[in-house]
Image 1 (cartoon, one colour):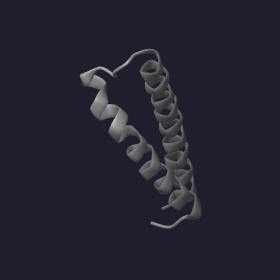
Image 2 (spheres, rainbow, N blue to C red; image 1 turned 90 degrees about the horizontal axis):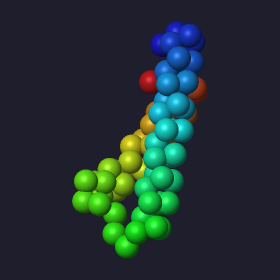
Image 3 (cartoon, rainbow, N blue to C red; image 1 turned 180 degrees about the horizontal axis):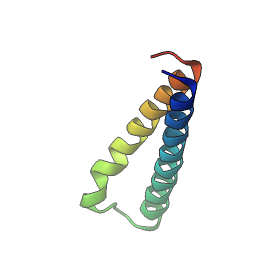
Image 4 (cartoon, rainbow, N blue to C red; image 1 turned 60 degrees about the vertical axis):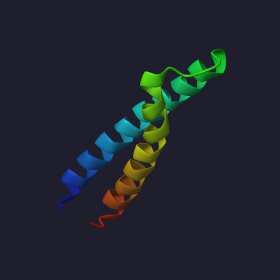
Length: 67
């Protein structure tokens, strides 16, 4: 992978991680104000941290040039 592509990929992943982290925080804040998180958001709240973690690992590999 050429360096320009790797930087572009890493940038996109970082942006997604930031959005995911803000969404997770929003779910946590929302959950803190109510007794129960709505059913529609339960699956997303459970899976989003896993997605963000996986993308963080991909970002690290892209920056290191390991693919």
